[in-house]
Amino acid sequence: MEQVAFRAMKDGTREEYEFLGGLEEEWAGGQAGRVLEAMASLDGALGGYRVSRLTHCLQTATRAERDNADDEMVFAALIHDIGDVLAPRNHAAVAVGIMRPYVREEVTWVTEKHGLFQEYYYGHLVGRGRNAREAHRGHRWFDSCANFCERWDQAAFDPDYDTRPLAHFAPLVEDVLSRPAWRAAG
Ligand SMILES: [Fe+2]
Ligand SMILES: [Fe+2]
Image (tube, rainbow, N blue to C red; front, side):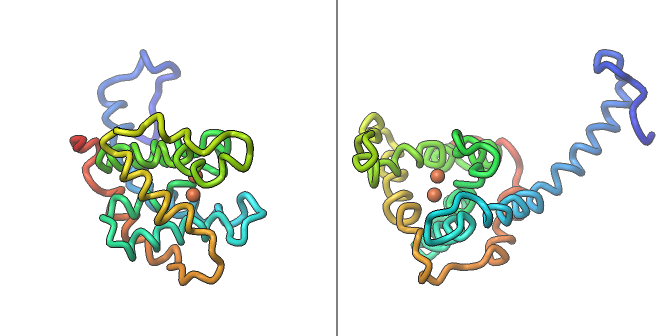
């Protein structure tokens, strides 16, 4: 079979859906390569800072790695701003969508909330106040997200920092995205 015969899903056969399932598995297997390509495209995203968006992400991940963060958290640090290209008004949701099937719930929570927690560093300078994160004070992962932002994300705008290249993180991306999807949260 090269392609299915149906023109509406309700008309498909078991054989056709098995055929499509195989193709979906094959396509999913190329996810890491596509994520790395999307990371590379961040090089041209959002100017004005002293580092490119790609360098910011690489530096966030480098800092996390040097802090001995676990591999899921380093992965999150690497891709946390990957949504800046296609979803600049909702960028964290893109990274969350990519990682959620593969990493523990803490990591997706931290990634989802990082933008709000980042406001601690500049919200008061742009008329929004800096304490939006207080809405989550007491949450079991508050400190984890505060640490993510304080030690890695907000600090990763230094053009003189020894930032590791994207190729350094490619095996990690391959590894995380080849784990069994939708592992139990914990
Ligand atoms: Fe961000
Ligand atoms: Fe960031």
